[in-house]
Image (tube, rainbow, N blue to C red):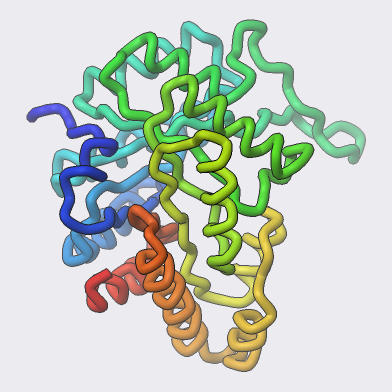
Length: 300
């Protein structure tokens, strides 16, 4: 099986904006079977690529590799596994990079990741576990490491229209994205957002800062009000009052109506984003097929 094409090439080769999906690796084999069923259903969506999230720790990490190969070999997807650097030594990262490259994958979503946490003691919150002494500190460091190890890797990185929660300021966050691009990142995918004006202003600021790579908007179709409140709180992004009111009015006893409202909001987002020049869109599927199929049916 030939190596995957670089996603950066697809931006220039496709006659339309790119569309992509994100999956997370299930915890057990029954979850993998369910994900396989979802992925088969989403063939009709015809994604240009799919990404698979990553967790530190052997079991989750191995599942990322297994799911990536399943999506690539069984379903013919161009796959972009996530890889984080915090908690890994450089030797471990070289080993992971070599394994990814040997498997035929050529695209990686390159992330810093969250600090691993040790066990809580005496009821107190767990404190971060110190990473290995030579562990790369930032995503830009991981980008440089991967490019030096295998120059044909195509690397995506994260971008934050509403600022990373740990960034000191919006400008320092853009500076961090610039550092990732200068280190060799080929494109960026944004954190979820629900207000398109935030994306467009963010892209303008990035261009003014000299960031020229494609910046793909990440979209989460809201499937429930509780879910979307949890994600917006965790990611520190704005939940528009209009969306919250619509989801609240649908009630908790009508999940199909709530999912339809959330999907329609996301569809309007994508329509406006593509009309405004976005290079594509990336759907956070939560391993569900319903909302993504709605996008395929609309031709987006």
